[in-house]
Amino acid sequence: MELALRDPRALHLEIGEPDQAPGAHVTEAVARAAREGRTGYTSSTGLPELRAAVAHRVSERSGRPTSPDEVVVTHGAMHGLAMALQAVLGPGDEVLVPDPAFPNWAMAAVAAGGAARTYPTRPERGFVPVPAEVEAAITPRTRALVVCSPDNPTGAVYPADVLAQLVEIARRHDLWLLSDEAYEAITFDAPFVSPAAFDTDRRVVVFGSVSKTYALTGLRIGWVATPDRDLLEVLGHLAEASVLCPSTVGQHGALAALTGPQDAVAQAVASYRGRRDAALELLAARGIAFSAPEGAFYLLVDVEEADSDAFARRLLERVHVAVSPGSAFGALAEGRVRVSLASARPVLLEGLGLLADEVVAARTGRSAALAR
Image (cartoon, rainbow, N blue to C red; front, side):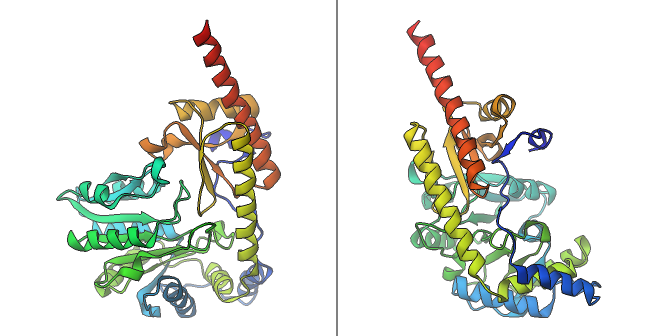
């Protein structure tokens, strides 16, 4: 990303940044809050009315009744997950994350004094985990299990039966299950199901955000929802110690996003679906392998090379296309690159065409060398 930012000609397919504009009612809510002087501190756990709106959304989407006092508003979903790992990990304790995985989860575990271990999600299974393989990765130091569906970077959407089994595994081993639901509104071929739907003993912690759904990545407003009172108290203290409180004008914008018209969300999801379908058609026509995403807005493309980092650097240098190397996400994403479907459609298709040219050229060169 840093290399791409230095290239004025770069086609940016590396960042999960929606190109959709936020709803006008959201930007007006932020501006109105600033004009009216609502720029002071709030409670460390967030505005009461925003906590109520989040509780309503979590209840609706997960099926687990959630009250406003079970919500902590955070500085984005990642802030919430980082605080949760600080709360549940002691020195040397472990959290299980998927492979491939959003790398910040492991970074947050290390920052909390713990460590991250992985459980596999394999391309031949659409990057959906096998519960038995998840359970086999648990050690005596495991304290928590991270689940992300729809997933970044794979776009996998986990079926209800798999999620139910993962919750049961967490129960059997007395683990927290941390559910990253930042992409819950963005699904194409499979319905979103929250693991909280199967929670019977307060171990599933839900993390959400307005970043991806409402194209408000820079607003930095997310949330944690948990019915566990002890965890809530610790999270409240950690929020005060880390950010004091989330941005007040940002919270007013998030409230408008959650409670206002949702037309822009439906339009954005339809647009991502159209881009996905066009991208898959282009790649299939060029003979490039890929893993078709069922949600989120990412696409893993097989570049037929073992070193995805070298491929990504070469692609940027030669044809000014920026992608994320699979090596950033784990061993099972190596040999692939992640492409953001949130990039503008013309940029996406031009960039994928140039990527396909590079893969085919390298393939042809290898075949010629073998023939010689």
